[in-house]
Length: 520
Image 1: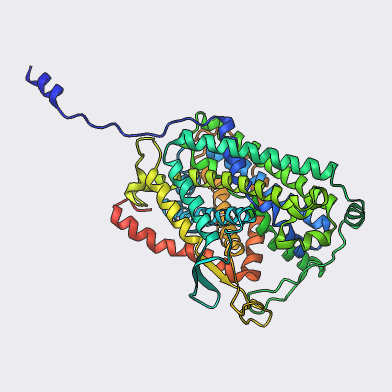
Image 2: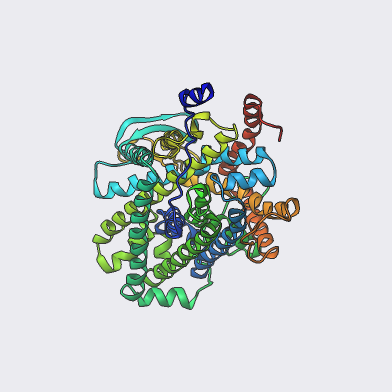
């Protein structure tokens, strides 16, 4: 009797909150597509054509990006099916190598990869909203630029305020539960995918420009207007796309920054594996379907640009807004408004997917004692609310830096009307930081397939990497080549990304010591 009384009066132990498995195949595919399509496809083709200098080169850059992206996604499918846990790529690196390598990925993801992308997309959202609302501008200051180095300043413009507000709004909204985040994702992804398809169909069928078609496709590979690519590394020669094999290799590798950034974040669905209904089937399938759909649309969008605009029109589109310049042939001045609305919808949906997914990695790290303990808890809505808010605050801070523009002589660029120094945004630099850091971990993760097949030959593998071992090896070789070129020709913006990764090593050991985890 006494035992039964004690049993009935003992305090109840609260049940451990767990993720709710609510994401089906459609939802998972929407996260892949929605996280990939942002603003890049409407802008970066201008810079790509300035680097490669030919219509064929433009299409080849996007096709190479597509092959790399789909190849990586098919390879990740094996790891996703083998380890369907929240945290995705963090877990794969931890299991393939050691907890330290998982931490270095999560550390870099938080400091620059995920948050840097969120910041860049937030800036793009505000930038195009400013085309509809003139009061939103990069030059309408709330806090005027404060120069902090020869290359950077801190400021707060109305454009930056809107970018920050978008990031924080979506971060808070996603604390209300997975169902809310999923609905937003599905709606905005559907809208922007249909709009991108509409742009392609209208461009190819209604916007055909006979002169542009003749110039671009009769001389598909002829290099014209290619900009010289100067190295940041001492002793390396300046090259251009028309300068033989080396020039072409460098141009194509540097051009991958824009296209790879525009195609990135496809791996975010792996972060949410703990919330997918049938992760062993649906994650590999969503990776394959999502990346294939997006890359097909991206390639066709560039075909549409070449059908509507001569190469020079793409290279020198005002403010790099290639899609806007192309649609002006059909809609005239209204094209700017149409494209602004499309990009606003696209970037809003893109950031929702990035914000929703990223916090799941910090959750997994916290569970291993390698991140703030509070990020490893789920709120009443069964989402990692603290991780969402922490990620949002850091991404918002990354919106504040501005680049100090300089002329060819290296002197600060001044506005001729006011005599005041001119400032750019951090968008292009964030692309370089993010792409280099991302490639480092993509290579390590795909190499992890080989490591895990040796370490765990008998582990269940419901799906096996396509074309193993040849296809994964080809991806590794291509990605390393791009990384080497970026290290030589974009040193000033790639070395900070590598430095961030390396700084994670002492931080890991400090955290590791405090948490008392088993040695890696």
